[in-house]
Image (cartoon, rainbow, N blue to C red; front, side):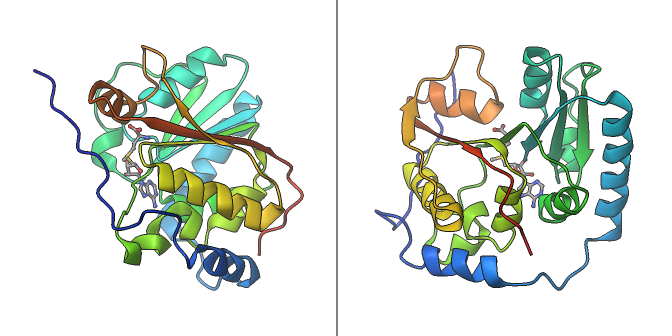
Length: 225
Ligand SMILES: C[S@@+](CC[C@H](N)C(=O)[O-])C[C@H]1O[C@@H](n2cnc3c(N)ncnc32)[C@H](O)[C@@H]1O
């Protein structure tokens, strides 16, 4: 029997009323803390790999066990796909050999994104697939769009895609992008392909939950501080 996955339980019934203020503050703020040494080392490895393979970059941010990284690499053989996750346990699970155009990196995204921006990376596609929702009101700052790193994520440009099982997460994400760069794109309910891009997608879809997707093609002109 398949385990049912619980729906998001949140006191919020609409986007957080402090979101726009937080995003504007993140845009104005200057980052003080230097990236951690272990993330610098992981980024340097990724940079060497990317430079050697010399193909357009696809970033799979928060890739978990890396199944989406593998699938994206197979779907886009002309691209280099980097999956980043901080969980050694998830990245270490055996899901078979990686395609030659895929790399899994253990790193904290907050620092990895900043290093990517500083190095001039411009992913052609950037995926945030089922990020942790942090559904309590006080957890807004932990959601990616409420986090101070968000302007750096948007400044990377490319075609950005968020998937989530919480409509409000997607609506807030869309509002945060709109606040930063004055661009709008719809939040849509969607039915995933039968081969599911990630384990979380499979789990939510098999439990009958509605899945939400937000996609926007960003230009890379927004500077991050
Ligand atoms: C809910 S899981 C989704 C994993 C995968 N995308 C999927 O759909 O199966 C969220 C993932 O984000 C990762 N994550 C959360 N915060 C992170 C951070 N600051 N840096 C890197 N990975 C992070 C977690 O380790 C976890 O694997």
